[in-house]
Image (cartoon, rainbow over all chains, first blue to last red):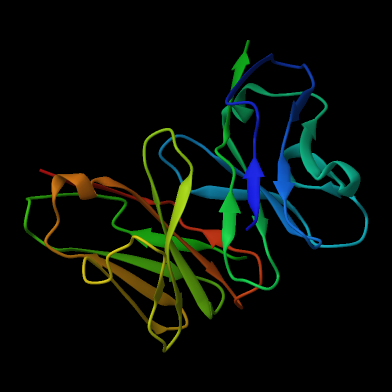
Length: 113
Length: 115
């Protein structure tokens, strides 16, 4: 069965600093990969997704992620974090043969001013 | 595009009553809708998948008679928590996709508190 691991439960960065959130997946075939962001008490907003093609994916709000098959990773990056980026970030994998999104446990991002 | 709404955004009810939560895709037709439950500071757990016009498929451990799901149209799915108890208190989030294998777009969630 597919699984998603987000090793970092909490991350704190200073505003203006770069950010990288880690995501590792376990799945036999090429997965469909997603990053979602959730603000407190809100639903999830799609940041970006990878289905195929260019392994560096650009998303909204200045985020990007890189799919690395050899490392089974799909890390999320942002060159300069803004205070408004403080939120919970979820990585998810969707298996083309199924119909379910499997989520990681999430990474809580705190931004220090 | 791809906006999903939920109503109500929060609800408080007495133990033993039933609560209905609506999930609507506002600007697209959703063949498939999903219902998730999220406990505080935890990830989303899929409860069930519903396809328009078909019975919902429930995840293992989710009581079908407790959580009734109806997907009567391509833009509306409802989750009814029957005979709610305090342990049903949670954050319920729906998502919708145009087809079963496409990107899911999430609603803002409904917070349920059962007293």
